[in-house]
Amino acid sequence: MSPISILIVDDHALVRSGLRLLISGQPDLQVIGEAGSLRDALDIAAKTQPQVICLDLSMPGPSGVASVERLRAAAPKARIIVVTMHDDPAYVRTAIAMGAAGYVNKSAADTELISAIRAVARGRVFIDVGDAATLESILFPHAQSPGKSPIDSLSERELEVLRAVARGFTNQRIADEIGLSVKTVESYRARLMKKLGLKERADLVRLAIELGLLTDEPGR
Image (tube, rainbow, N blue to C red; front, side, top):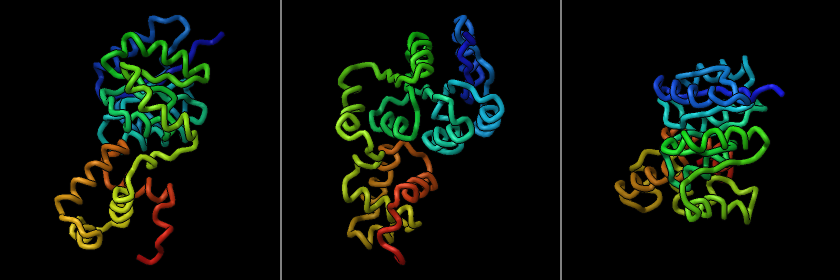
């Protein structure tokens, strides 16, 4: 049987080297490429079509969760394992909702990554978050409603702010229209970015469009 082919994506050369060394020690695994940027990763993924992609979500550039979607488009059959220091349950949920098949914290990568690669290559989902309570908080919403969107955990007010931000409104205009202080609007925006695992307003706009949040109030 051919070894599982793997692409490593991380902007730190030392991390890539360490992951390659770890993976290469396994006879059933083979690293077929490395990338230090999303652009390089997309190019290599499209050319090599790896079975598994180990992806760092904290690289410079587009939001990490957006990179999951773009890599899946470049290599449709690849299974993506997020390897990151983030352990916020909402961040994990968003990554999985966007198409990641695995989630491994960097602090445990040396013991869990090999298991994760083998699991996702067999079509399974692998989530390493350290404790059962955190895992339950990640999985419980989807255990009840498998088709849930990554925004289902947002409050009505958070959705209202998300729509306004996606339309390009300034914090002052949002504050005026909703009846909040500018500081409160800023707080909502920061909370939205954290909950959805996003880094830039452009990612909020893209997500809002994909989820149909801008089609319910035409002309505003």
